[in-house]
Length: 84
Image 1 (cartoon, rainbow, N blue to C red):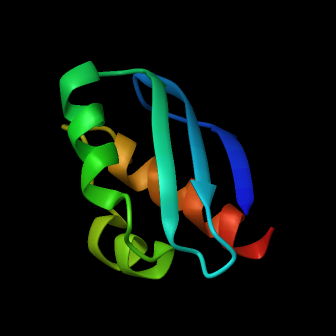
Image 2: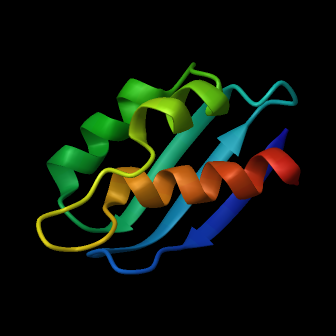
């Protein structure tokens, strides 16, 4: 199992906690801060998915005028997790 606690940048959420198996299949995701309902939904949608697949779908999503978003920051966390 792989585990990372990723400190976000430029979003309302402050931290993303991710657990994946050795094949980079996401087992658990939780966010600290941010839009609770949306982030719970995002977390449930990505569980059971390969990190690569999530990154390919969510990378580059912006939140309003911000250059990033919680889904985009999840991609940054998953990129670090894959190399861990």
